[in-house]
Length: 99
Length: 251
Image (cartoon, rainbow over all chains, first blue to last red; front, side, top):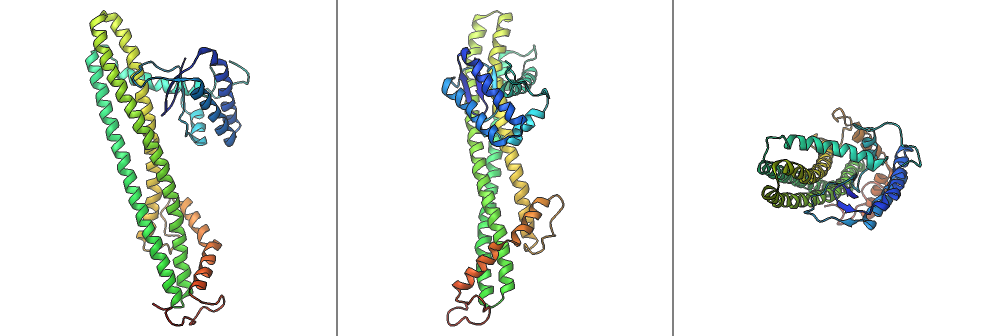
């Protein structure tokens, strides 16, 4: 699967990482839902680190679209909050342990 | 995949598909979609130039503030040397405000620079992808039937579209930042234009935040500390505020 970190680049990850990615992802959602700002930054950094360290960067001239698009690394807590209440987002938080 | 990446992907992909819908009406040829990509690239370049201009303006404002700080410091010293402690205090209060603004402005310029760098990187990637698209379209034109070409080109265009959305996001963030900074810098200039930081109520509406900050700052003990330090430097005793200046003190 291909994951993009916005304003940074695309990474190709082995599909077996999907479950771990999902876990890290849920932790980020949980922190945002709990209004835990420092928790959010820590969890989000963990998620990005996982993508960067496990993923292989795509060449710049690669035209493959990404399966998942993560927000930019310097996203603020306020911006993260906006994303969650913005257009097209499902209001109820993801129940932990799904996916 | 639920959660932040799943949801953000949904939002961004929706944006991309809107973007592609515009570019991909069935009548459009491969060459035309390439032309459209090049046009977008031009817009991106223009957008980057705007961000750079805005940043330069803010840097100029920062230099002006720096000058104000020096000037107010000198004025405070002169006032104190002349025995006018009230005036010295006022000058120091203004200096304090200007200094705080200066720090905030400098920090924000640094953040803006980081965003600008990302924007430039993202634009470079977009250029590469558009280039790759050009190569690919020639291959597709030569090798595939019209129907299959449609499918393949739409895949390739999705890759370009995603990068375009990424540049768009980087641009949006940089512009938001300059906008934010400009509003704040304008408020400070307005204060300066009013001649002084004297009348703290002379602020326009909607500047409550700065207003509050100013009020806070002017009551801060930093000003008193600095005043005391300045007195010591000028050789005035802590209690004596008048004519102990002696030789050389009064220029």
